[in-house]
Length: 188
Image (cartoon, rainbow, N blue to C red; front, top):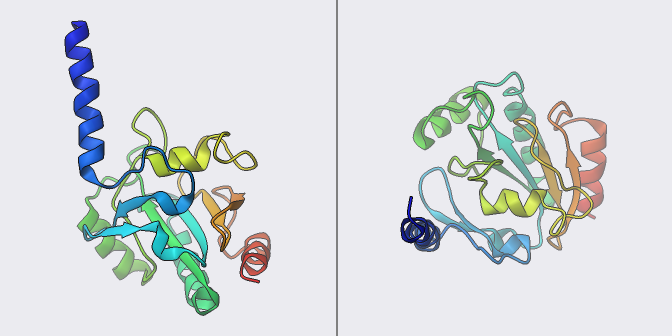
C-alpha cells in the first residue's frame, strides 16, 4: 500500500468520525460526548449534567445479561433522586451482541422491561474503540479507574459533577451493596 493510500484512508476515517457527529475527538469531560440512541437520535451527554450516571457496556447473549433486570431496578429506584443508567451494547466478546440496534431495543424491552436510555451498538475495546470508552478507560482521562474493558457489563459511575468516581467489574451485580452505597453517596 502506498503512503498516499494510507494517508487517504486515515483522512477518510477521520472525516467519517467527524461527519457522524457522534464523537468528540478532544473530549475533556464526559459531557463533551454526543452519541446516537438505539432509535438513531442524537443525544448529548450534556443532557445528564447534574445527574449521577451509571455507564454500562451490555450484551444480550451473555451469562451476565440478567443484569439488565438489575440495572432497571436501580434506574426505577433512584431515577427520582437523579440517577440515570446508560446502556451501550457492544459485540466485543465472542459475538454476544450480534443483533442490530432495533433488535437490541426490542430484546431489552420484551425480556427485561428496560426503560433506561440505551445507545447504538459501539466498540468498547480494540482498534475501533469508541471515543467514549477510550475516555473511560485511559489513564490520562481516568487516572483512578482506568483499564481495558474485560467483558460485558463493566460499570462506570459518574458523579453529578461529571467525574468518574467508581468502576465495577462484570461479576459485581448492579444491586450489590457496594454499588448501592456508591450510588447513594453520589446522589448526595
